[in-house]
Structure formats: C-alpha cells, structure tokens
Length: 570
Image (cartoon, rainbow, N blue to C red; front, side):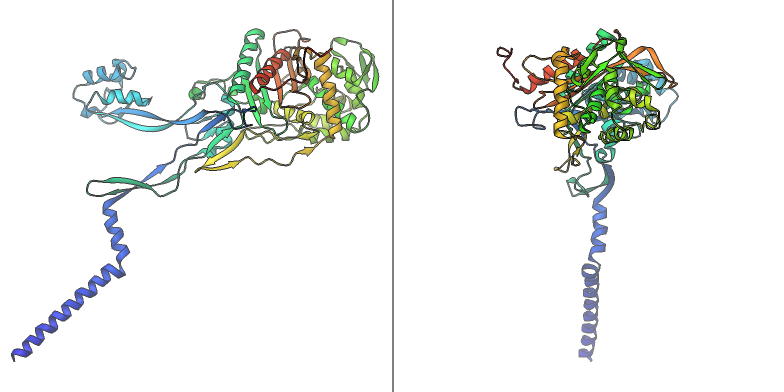
C-alpha cells in the first residue's frame, strides 16, 4: 500500500517535470524570437529621423599644380543648425524678469518678448533662427518656462557669390533654381529609423541605414576665377552703369565651367527678402538674346567648311547690300571697299557676313546652326535652362537669313553661344558644358560622364577661323584685348535689343560682348563677356577690357608660359 502511494507521487512529479520541460522548450526554442523581441521592445525605442542635406563645394583648378579638381575646396552650401526658442507662459514665475533677461541675450526688446507672452497660457514661439552661441547664452540664464529646439537650416557661406549657380532651398525643404534645384534628389537627406537601446546605465543609438545624409557636390567652378569675374562685373556696373551682365569661363576642350558670373546677384540666405523674383534666374542660360557680330565667325566657318570661301576670298563692300526690298547697312553706314574675309572679321563688316551667307543654301545654314546647338538646350546641369526653336528664322524670307549671318534675328542664350564657340578652340568639336565634377555619397565618388564630342567642322576649318580671329585681336576691333607675349583669338559683338512687342529694336539700348580664347595656339580657357545696356556710345567696345583683365588674371593664376618673347618679336 505504501509503495503504491509513492509510485503515484513519483508519477505526478514526473508529469509535472515533463510539463515544465515542454513549456520551457516552447518558450525558449520554438518562440524564442517572439519573446526576445518583446524583451527588446521594453529596452528600445524607435524614432523617425532625416539625414542632412548634402554640401556643395568649389574646387580650385590648379592647372599648374596637378590639373583640374586638385586644389583647395571652399564651401558654397552647407547645413547649419538653427534654433527656435519658445516659452510656456503658465510655467513662468515672473514675466517681467523673464522678458528682461531673455531680450538682452537674443537682440530683442523687453516689450517685444512681453507682447508674445501676453494673453497666452500655452506654448508660444519667441524667436526663430538663433545660432548655437545664442542658445548657449540663454541656457545659462536658467529661466523657468523657456525651451529651445534644434532645426536644420541651409546656409550659404559665400553669400552673394555664385548665387544664381547655387540657387537656394525653399521653405518647404525643396531645392529651387541652380544646383539646389537640379540636384535636389541627390542632395536631399533620406528618412530612416533611429533605434535607442537602454541598459542599466547606458543609452546608445543605432541607425538602420548605412547613411541617411544626402550626396555632396564638388564643382568645376573655380572660386578664385568666379570671384574675379563677379568683381569685374561690379566694377563695370560702377563705371558704365550696366543694366545686367554675365561672364562665362570654360575649358574649351572639356566643357568644364570655371566661372558663371551674373550681375546683379542676391544672398541665398536672405532670398525671401527679394521682391524681384527675376533676380533668381541665371541669365546665362535662362534668358535669350540676339548675339550680334559674335555670330560672324560661325558664318565664316560654314562658308569655309562648305568650300565656298577661304580666309583670303575677297569681296567689294559698298556699305550696304539689298535683299529684295530690304537694305542692310554696315554699322554707322561705313564703306570699306575691297576686303578679304579676314578683313571682314577684323572690321566686323555686316555686308561681308551677308556675302558669305548668300553662297550657302538656307537649309545648309540651318543644319549648321542646329549642329552648333542653337536650336536646343546645352543640357548644362543647372535648373531651368531655356532655348528657342528660332521658328521665325526657319520660316522666314531671305532677309532673315542675311541678318542672322551677323547675329540679328536669331536668338540664343549665352551658354549656347560659348558652347558653339568651343569648336574654334577644340579642333572643330562641340563640347557639353557641365558644372558638377563629381558626386560623393557614402565615400563613393561618381564623376560626371560626358557624351562623345560632335565634329561640327573640320579641324582645318576651325584652325583657319581661329587664325582669322587672332588677327581681330592683333590688328582689328578687338585689339584692346591684346596681352603682350600671348596670342589670343576673339570677336567683338554689338547687338540691338528687340522691343518687347517683337516689332523693331530699342533705339537707345545695346548688348555689347566679347568672346575669345587663349593661348590661341594651345587654348586653356574660353571667356564670354556680355554686358547689357552699358551707358556708352553704340560703337564702344566696353566688353573688350573686361575680357583682357580676366584673361590676364587666369594667365597669371595658372602661370601659363608666353607664346613668344616680347623682346624678340618684331
């Protein structure tokens, strides 16, 4: 009887033990992950976070010390912490003392702080846009009821410099204009989850992504050349009271944009204060103009490439040429007599350009203009580029083609013009302009990939026209651009400004420009200077000295050796 009872107890113990083991197996083996997650949930918290917006950098092009992109970097756009300070009025013990102590540390008046607190019992914002040093000062006040919150803000350390190039970040966090707009998806930080784990005495965070920060942009634009170009535009504004102006500098063999300067400019840090929204536009690629006589080298190139003329071909200028019922005159109705085509460029003779165009079928002329990129975008990597299909020219009578030969009645952007001009410095090949050299994301570098360069005219044609333009600088109207010891090639331009209604031209306005490259025999730089409505006579060559100063600066900056010894040249 006794053994039977012991056996019953033993069986119960065994069953109970088996049940415990089965339960432990279920908890620790079969449902391990579920209960581990529950345990972690009591030790961890999750929070949605956003990565910082990528930065934008200048990279100085030390041509004489290792080549493009190897120089010093300077920040053009960065993320900088900003703070909002607020108050809970129902927690403030004495509003008078609170307002007095706070006001003198945030550059406000006591009365303005009190006004924001008046009649409020809950959360109220006192001031936005405070810097870290401001917050450090108010922290030490230990004011009860005062709070602050960190908010990321976009900051542009160079202020007005290259403003139309960089653009700005709008209030909704979206990039507007320029690089900020074009590369918004690359620059924008990504959203992710932040996990906080807590131990007995430890709190640490772990991001559930490799990186949430946006990509950084490294530009082709050289800070020093950009600064010099903008300084020259400010100088010419002071001396000639220009309405506006643009300077573009590129490497003619690659399309790297070294400077893209606009006047007037603005401060992207204060963009909301601008009343004229047109100032945000980059006139180099967002506004069309009729280029004037800087088009004549293109007309010459078409004639030479088609075998219709050479640089030595002559014609006799009577001072005018009749096209149907229309009469085209030279500037100031000058009459030059017998001239070579080189002489036509040297003296910028309108009738000489018409002489060449009349030897070319209209469809051929249009095809070259199209191949030069004048009827399409350059696809430069900046937001908002425009272009004209030039339908009035394409569908117009003979006189439209005649005037287009010397740059009137055809409209392009400055960026299209300098891109087209690259053929004369690049053996007849057309480049694609670009502003971003590389994009860096998570330490991975992606360099801009360029399309194959198009051969627009032969290398012989390009060389012949370049030689003609050397003569423009050596002994023609562009002689003011001459720099001792160097051969430069270039062309002057004075264009009329169309009336807004499209019928005729402004009687007292001009656009004056000069475009050229150097050293002409081994081109390192190509510069376009465009001045809108300088207050000088129409015959003035106001853009020429600006080109010379900038060309001389680049020659000195890059330490470009001279083409010849000035003591030996006759």
